[in-house]
Length: 130
Image 1 (cartoon, rainbow, N blue to C red):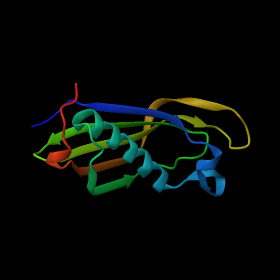
Image 2 (cartoon, helix red, strand yellow):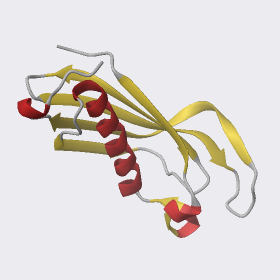
Image 3 (cartoon, one colour):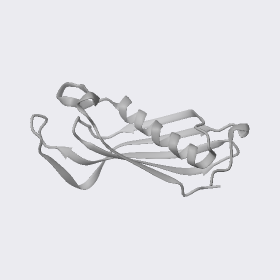
């Protein structure tokens, strides 16, 4: 059984998100955003946050403080208690220079990371969501 449920989070990486030199954001911050998107989908689908059983992440491009990201999460399969969710993170606005306030809207969103999560929502925690 598959579902068309999808969620979107858009946010700006702040200077507090910059972990490395040049304001580079660590991959763990992106994974936490994926986790937030997965949690929202599980609540919308099952009325419960569930628990992640397996996660896979791939990173393709750097993210820096000042960049805007769009996180998309899509429920791709539903088992009796398992849920498979695929997520992407795209940079949609990039800060031009970390020492300046100028930024540019990217002509095409840039894929910076991809994530797959298999979560479990125990049967006794699942409830119908309207």
